[in-house]
Image 1 (cartoon, chains in turn brown, cyan):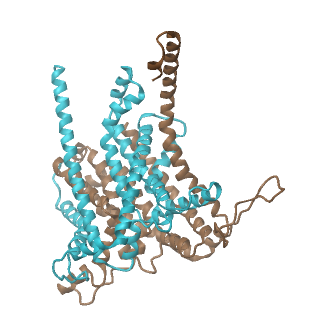
Image 2: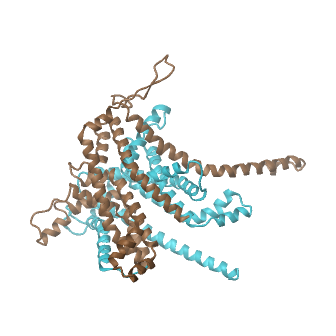
Image 3: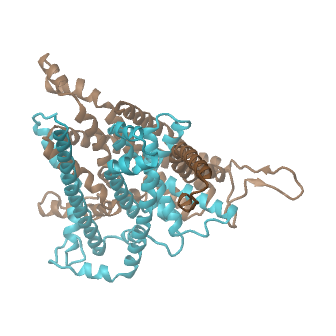
Length: 323
Length: 281
């Protein structure tokens, strides 16, 4: 624009303008790189990291009947040069005293752990089978593992109510076949929660397992068999150790979100299914005690830090292997 | 690696896929059931679909959810692609470890944690800076974009790491400006990953109940929030009809995407072949 409107006479000005434009472009290309990092970095910092700091701050407040419903962190009365920090440890003391929270944390860990093991037991043979089918079928099978992930999670969990309830599909089928005379209690207990978690998170287990099993070198298995190992033994001494990264990644992808699961225990669980996600929800929406809910959140994050670090180490390693 | 499968593995695969698809099939079948009871087959009927399209609460919520999902997809694709590029191409930069944890954190962090922490942040910033003015579409979109971005980043990053950077370097060596290289070389290569990331963000946003429940305000109930309040009271055939429609759309979309990608790949291979022939190989 500027070049086009400039008079042909002032050639030096034009040249100077060009140099300046080039210098600016060079500056921008350097800053372009910084911008590529800075934009998502800033977004995630503001909307993912800062919220945790605020939760930590509010977990040290006390509930009050005003808006916002918690005490201030900084007290800054008129005439005082420096603000005073107001900290209450009472929420954490409350979590320690009330066995409800302990039971809920431990129960969530137990349910998540058992579900992870179940996912592994069900998912491993499927991933193994997919990795060994011919390439054309393999693409289709993989697509079929991913497809449920694209349909509503909430609705897929809801489907199990119709299947498991007293007059649901399974009970009706078993009773019409004469296998049972009394309907089985399969809904609103721990059993249905396990079914729901395994069902919902199975693809998260299968995909990383498949990724490691697919890369596995068949000649290693053949070598083991040539040396006289039976298939079962070759499987446990060669295949399983080599697929350990996949096992670890899949287990963490199931375990971590399962600990904090809310939808599955509230739709499929019973009144005595204590899971921390449900407690947190109730503390927040029913009791409206934001500081206690914040303390519950902070403890939950601390509980999940170890598995999250394991998962991230694993991902960094996988990424390095790729590069 | 192709090897013969043992009967055990085949049985497990059959049961596994039956387990994954049985509930979805049951949802679809009973959406056409005349009777309101799940186990009683009252004959074929589409009346629940009729009731669904006349249910204004659900329609309104569906419209709102679609709006949020579109905006979420757009934001998540832009920021996620940038983050994926940074992780795949820039090697080690200052703060990379922290950046990686910020990116992968939302992938596994339980929804309740993301929801409550974002809500408390919105409440605090409203108190400090007067933003946001109440909660609703904007806050839900920001929350969704934050966790969807992580998925886009992972997809774009893995696509870019799998491709070598020499084409981009060649373009730079030939004098193209970085921005030009991005739009003419990098973007066409990673476009499938970006599209996949957009679609995934769109779906995840459309599907989210927990985070939206925390950061929504009065009058901004998304589709999952309405569905959840209905489903809590028990089985409702209208919801089955809704599920069937969603499964139908997703299946068609996935099949179409598969065909398109297959064609594009074929064309690419043909182009490469042609280029090689012209070069005299």
